[in-house]
Figure 1: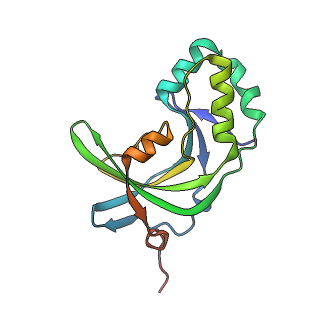
Figure 2: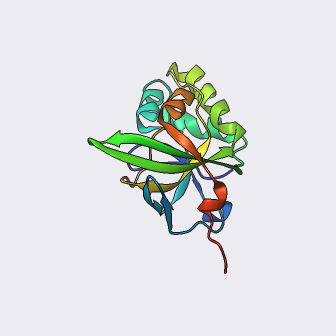
Length: 163
């Protein structure tokens, strides 16, 4: 099973290798700004707030068995999206890649049932590029994605081109 872990801020994540997204350039220029490639890639399973809510009713020691019950394979899709949000009063953007990971929402439902925490389904995704923020834009539900999505980004524009 892949190693899921808590971040220093308390989120539960699945770290991912850059090999999953080969040829990502270090920077990406879009009309909305100049984006930097994230320095690490991950799939967020539970946000900090969600992980705290789950831990109040389901001991963290019970999490590994529940996590191990799911298939954590992650498969990238060609779908890329530009997100926009506000952070500390300024506009920030990210470019995300939708991924297929059946375990994500299945695990969230399992944790919600076991803890009573409200954990809606979310869009399985990985943040590839950021502008104005280092941490990305949180998406804890499909509604969050719908509200923060600006447009589709051509995936060809997010790869380095060999000359």
